[in-house]
Image (cartoon, rainbow, N blue to C red):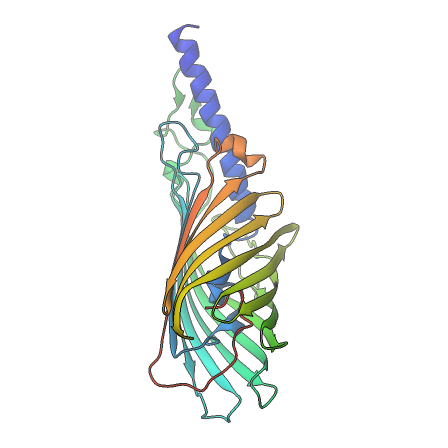
Length: 357
């Protein structure tokens, strides 16, 4: 094989990889640029605003980062990553009555994809009201609302189009893309609502379940001058938490989301093993778990908790047809959560969180 043919084959393989990855991204883009955290439970505000302010403490701080397909193309580092930072607060505790309280939270998300530098920046504010259904603090019903300001941008000059292809050279980005009328930045407001229930079944077992709707107002999102409305996204979650006091806990959950014709199903379990515990809030734990995203990925999770701070790391092992395009590359995901207390709070049984934190 001569050198010219070798370069042509490498170029064609690279183009094929680009096309497959771009098809995946464009498919997600037509349904809005949505987050796909395997540790969805580590950013509870992102999938259901009814989670805002529901935890044992005064405030909760969290960060998440996911890096996907970094070396999908030989000799290139691809930028497909998602990051978030959030803070939520439990407020009006005992100000309404002895059973109810409220929550307020803020969440910032940055999502980047590909050579075209497709970027989505989202700033959320969420509020929730938590209703105690019994005097023993065993059963709760929560409703939540969120509003977001979203800004999306793309660099068309960095993308490859068919009219920029030259047979002897390959892609020449100095040529006009002839894409007609388009814009490189768009912004809109987005609204979401949620409902969540939590029940303590006995001293060791808790149940939680919820449903939320995102893009309720169906905002217009397009880089071309056309009215492309985002489809409403439905999210369903259910979890079962078992705790052997002072020894271990196991949190099993199921997460399902659908939007137009696309859907995602994620299920698995996370176990926390107590290494040392002097009180409920002074615990050292090791975490190990496994989650499966239907027809897509297997995700082992490992983590560590010291008192009220927890860190989790997982790796998505690609099982789908995309593994050929990504050359077997999966995705790393990291989360860090810290819960603090401004003042002593009433003893509520929140063990129905999945996982508990």
